[in-house]
Length: 351
Ligand SMILES: [Zn+2]
Picture 1 (cartoon, rainbow, N blue to C red):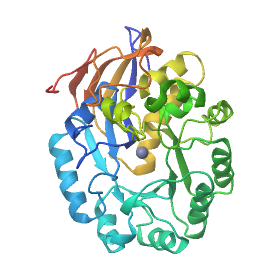
Picture 2 (picture 1 turned 90 degrees about the horizontal axis):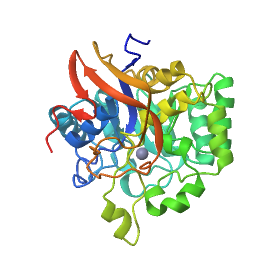
Picture 3 (picture 1 turned 90 degrees about the vertical axis):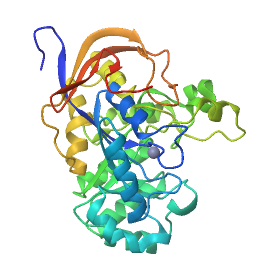
């Protein structure tokens, strides 16, 4: 894995949980800025979430957004479709085209919230068996999601699992042979509720930051139950975060995910082999993402610095991890044989 200049070569990373804010939130992020931030963070494939304005819940909105993403993105982007009680009839057609379905069981407003067991059951049956049903589920909703996987014999992926009991339920479900997978975010691995107090609105997201005992539980499952790490990159402007009465939850993460995981590997908290499985191998396997030939990321695993080491590409321009000492610098990213990033510069980016 190491070449002669002691750089380490990783496969292109796939981030399966990203909010690109198109359509409707382009002042926070767009496909160009979001994909540039991804590349700067060593991410060559990303999956975009459907909670936009309007939400991506019909074939027409999905098609328009995916076309725009293909035209404007600097890396590969696959868009989720969102499950909505108001648009159930769209699911068969969306199921033929969208990479996966996102279903919000908790804490989301408007058309994307799905509750009621009947509705969940209908969606679980309407969505193609070979494609993933990705759940935003917290607390007891995780149990309901496990029941869905069991009852309908279908693949269920849990987004941003953050609590001890949740990861233990998923561990048990896997032991029973159910087809469940899960992701955790870097902020739930590296921050706790104490950090949330210090960061204020800049440390507020859903699920909220948890107790240190929850953080410890996630690390205990990092080599077993946890299938992948995804950023849940959810940018908002500093003004929205700091100057509004009800700051919106969510923090950016595309540019900090790999440096943080490399730091954990340098500290011996996980192996570099496991890092590759969590960030590249499993995300591609779970969602059936296409391979990217001649694509790799060169990192210097020994380089220590204070994050960030470049002006951030995400349009929101801030990070909850600013000032974090990290170890592991991205030197170069090559996508399909072409150098796209060198020492913090994304070549095709237009400011
Ligand atoms: Zn999210």
